[in-house]
Amino acid sequence: MTNSLRPVWHKASQLCLAACITLGSTAAMAVNDLRGGPAVNQIDLHPPVTQIASEQQWLHNFMLIICTVIFVGVFGVMFYSIIKHRKSKGAKSANFHESTTVEIIWTVIPFLIVIGMALPATKVVVAMKDTSAADLTIKATGYQWKWGYDYLKGEGEGIGFLSTLDATQREASDAGKPVGDDYLLKVDNPLVVPVDKKIRIITTANDVIHAFMVPAFGIKQDAIPGFVRDTWFRATLTGDFYGQCAELCGKEHAYMPIHVKVLSAADYTAWTEAKKKELAAKADDPNKVWTLPDLMARGEKVYANCAACHQANGKGAGPIKALDGSPIVLDADITKEINVVLNGIPPGMPSWKQLSDTEIAAVITYTKNSWSNKTGQLVQPKDVAALRK
Image 1 (cartoon, rainbow, N blue to C red):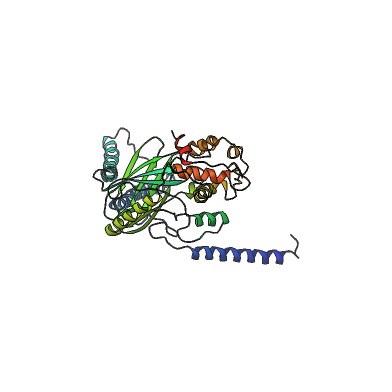
Image 2 (image 1 turned 90 degrees about the vertical axis):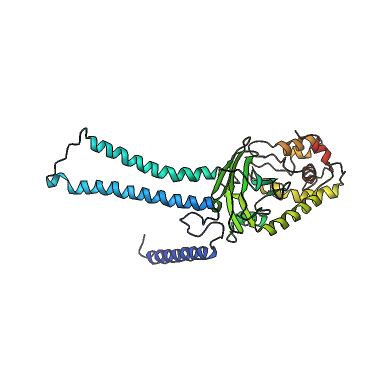
């Protein structure tokens, strides 16, 4: 580098460093701890809000102390021996060959340590798996990439809905502009449960392996297609608590959050009553014959689930096939697209059987008559019902 360029390079380096520091400081100041979720520079476990989570935290610290004592003891003796009895000082090694005393010591001490660690750990693990006598049972089904919740037993029985990443969060991610302390954790429909009640969560999956994890509750359970697993929690505080799918489940894995809203008993009862009225109002007559405008209006709302991959303009992206101009969408045989939506096409296209016949009919009609796809074709709910397996 010539001397004439050195001052310029030095100045540019200073400006770059200053900009990086400013950006780093701004980013650090823009994010705060999220109550019930992650904290800035967090190095400990989440603050527990269940008895199990408290016991897990105590067990974690207990094991850490034991391991630290062992580490200090073993390496302390080792380095002391190396330094104190080194050959340069004329030290001569002792002969412990076939020493019964030494063999008993190095057998008994590790045995006692293992027992001391195993007893409290076993107690916590057994308690974690005791899902009996639950006040409320909820099935959590993992989909690519959202959660489905069905209230199977207890107050709120019969309620069911999908929980998807909030659309504004996805837009912020696509734009590369994180917003809010709950970035990529905000959902449209959180899981709602009552405080101080034992909640049993049954996990399964519709496509690939997912995992239901809420750190503040001390729960993490795999959701495996074709299998039923379960876990439980009893929240001692009201509020919002967050988790995520903890199993790498595909390209949208980062967009599969879990939001649990814990309410008081009275507020939970009010929520269940309102939710049942809402679901009843949305219930569709499966024999109803819909008009094209009504199906298009309904389908546009349902298509929000598809736009994450196929885009709002139907053009797709990368390996995601476009719906605009798609031969299957344009085909006069409506059963082809119905089968795709119902059953999926592995590995990229998931099954959408969880949607109602009316919702599937509406979204297919929407794709057949949007963008450049002006087919004029209608799909009625009875057409979808006839192809369900």
